[in-house]
Length: 161
Image (cartoon, rainbow, N blue to C red; front, side, top):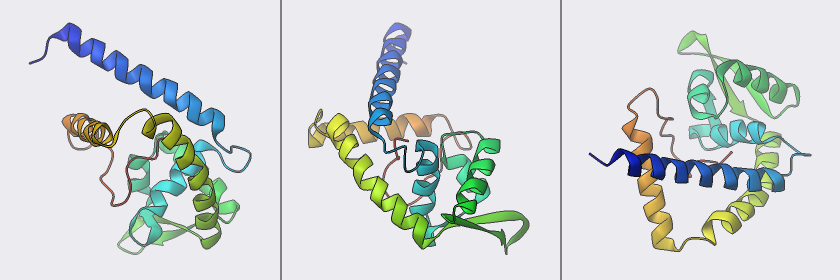
């Protein structure tokens, strides 16, 4: 078991680094095209198998609350960026799929966002440190237990959104 003071200091450092980097990323994000929350939704759908995801699973993956996700998905659907269909395996569920237009917009914004992430994270750490950071963050995320950690969807690492 770690010393409590050291554990709190490590948490504080991690939290402050995350907030500082998120502020820098938000300042550079092309929000005139799409919001960070909209990007997060499209990111999670785009990396899911067949670019479609149950709304329930999307709720576990994004960084906003469930009621906000439903409203946001409705706005994205109204813009033609996603489509909602009933889940054929569960009549109460909904499947959300990204449209070609939505995927095209997502990719265009993703390249800009990835450049900013590279500048603020990748340029500060070498390859080994980046691998260690991934491992440490994955261990921390998994340590909270099933149901609280975000889902392990295939694809790239967290969006940073």
